[in-house]
Image (cartoon, rainbow, N blue to C red; front, side):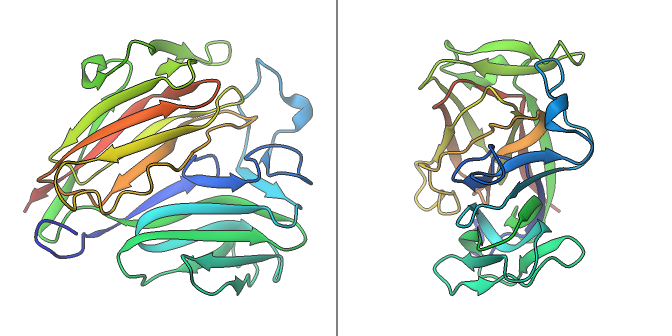
Length: 289
């Protein structure tokens, strides 16, 4: 809820299949018959090498594994999942509601649900047969109260080191210089390394970085001393994965929305895997009209 007591204004966030916010099970990348497989429309596995990790064309995650599933957790009112699959090849459920058989994709849309009560939700899409691919999703979150206008501020991790705390185990690196001009990020390869920052006078933020084959799991904890201010925060124990055979930069790795602009929030990122990188934090403020 906003400080006025009204539901926050709807705001759509687009996610590619490479975004860690879309979680794939049992694993994010592997063989198509026993995991989800990261695929690019104009790249083949035979073309991949250490010096050629950027896929060409449109990305998707596909699988033929019965029981494979995806989860998306968010605070908002609507969700659209895009990809391909035939009728009866997947089931979808939201929260603890009834499971519905997938109707098959229509123009690349596998499933949509609008008009949900504002709050925390989880959508589960499970493969039941055939091949299913996921190319992305759109989620409607809450950003700012009625009578406000959104304004964004981009904080570069590489050039705003004073914004972050507990950064002793982190370094500023130019990634992928063997293939590009470089992608400046704050990085770590120490398991359990944490990085913290404070967000105030904001209604949401998105952490951006890259996906690649060297990264592992991470968590993000968002807390506030203000009672009720964290009601729209997804579970702090959720483990996100940016691991993918093919690299994609500037993807949303974590999203917090529906924040109370009068509250202050402490954000702590914990690296649980081989490595983790962060390029920027996009902070949303809501200004009165």
